[in-house]
Length: 78
Image (cartoon, rainbow, N blue to C red):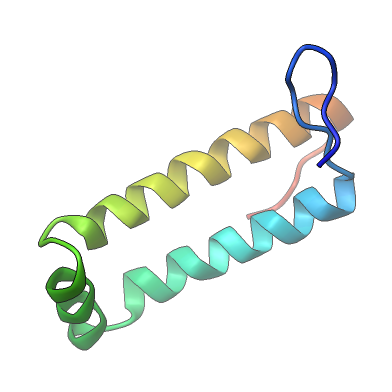
């Protein structure tokens, strides 16, 4: 891991794009994975975990997307 003195993580733009694609894909799998996936997550963890995972992925992807966009003044597609 490479970090700056202020504690912020340095991430290559290509890695940021790949990470965003992964987060978006995981979010889609969780949203559209079906009842079996929801039930399995609820059984293994707790009943609200499925919704919590979707919300967390959306928040983190949004933060990374905004950070990457503000640095490069461009738009990183969803």
